[in-house]
Amino acid sequence: MADDASLLIASAREQAWATPLDKFNVGDVSHFTSDTWGPWFERLRQ
Image (cartoon, rainbow, N blue to C red):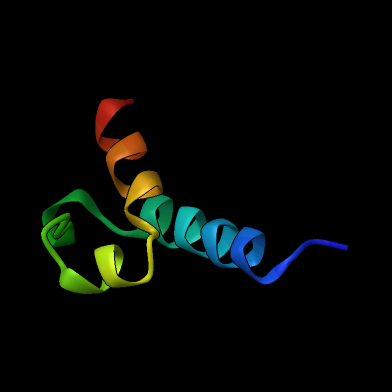
């Protein structure tokens, strides 16, 4: 069973890849306060 942090990251990854790039905001504070910034920057690197 996945822990809460893994589920949060998986959800953030889904959201990052579903968000159109013109709506992208990697500076959104919520990405950093929830420690889910990784998937957003991962998408930008791709």
